[in-house]
Image 1 (cartoon, rainbow, N blue to C red):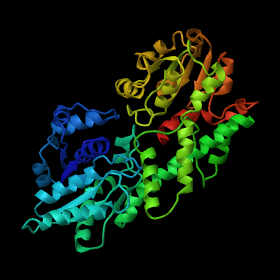
Image 2 (cartoon, rainbow, N blue to C red; image 1 turned 30 degrees about the horizontal axis):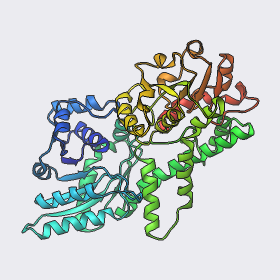
Image 3 (cartoon, one colour; image 1 turned 90 degrees about the vertical axis):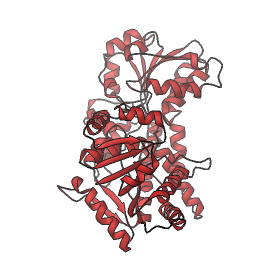
Image 4 (cartoon, helix red, strand yellow; image 1 turned 180 degrees about the vertical axis):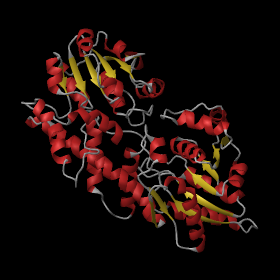
Length: 475
């Protein structure tokens, strides 16, 4: 099939490469010529496991190409995917200017029948607005072109996006029941047939329900995270091990283990933005989503938990203190720094006069860019941050180690080396990678999230060896 992807950001690039991999002819449109030139050479602007190889292979096979030619992109694709950004406005609502601009270009140049697919995360009613734009553009032209607007939200986890696309747990498609909608349904069914071979994964529904499903899913996952973080903070107060609690409640099949990991807050491009957008949609209809407001508030507070623990241990004035920070990206297996808890922590430490040595396996370049902006209002703030080439370098001479992102390379360090390189053998673990009893045996003072149980021993952590692995898979 001939497919056009409008937008070569995270969603558009993964979608285009994966659809080309199963044999489709994919045309990816982006207005940034420099970016297009890089992509046509197989150079990927984001870090995503397996994506570079996928793009190179399909470009070489002639199934995937990148261009700035808007007219050619509309002519090429029988199915037009809109996969552009929907950043939050000042009021938290999704900014749809790029979505509607894409729809305007499709309407301006289309001939024949097109399926126009909203792949971007958009609020309920966006398909109606896209449809109105298309109708308006076609009305100004003497053409027999026609279309159907479909909602097909993405459910990709950064760091595992290729696997998620190629082996999806569900494919959500919203179509209307008009004759054109039935035609679109048939084409979408054909498109996703390679992903449904061993079992049917497609959930068909109306367009509004499909739009809503994406927001509902992310809001539910964000709620579970904030719920566990709030319990973890209480666990620290009352002497409870939140990991033991997690196992106890996760064993209930009605609850399950996924997204029950306490930590230092969620970040990224999806959860924070989508929670705000869903709240904004509710406000437009006169409804107050009290739970989601609390979810957002808890998460913002949680990003300060590590900083608060450092202050409790070292005092309010951190001048003369130096800290090592492992992990900068909002989650492992990505270089995404959007809404990353590390940014809040580093700003707080630097603001109190500390210096920091930071390391991340893939996000250092992006971290340099965003931290320079984050600390621009502090005299010499950016100069108080040293970017290290490896995790051992970051440790040398630091008063303590702070772990923010649960990269696999951090899971089994040399504890003797950590103890010898730090001025003080102190670890603040924002992702609960380690067991308190293990750290005690290693002679390291340990501060986890909700792990201050007075009598923590091996018996309370029978299953916790899977914690780090599951946390990576879940987020």
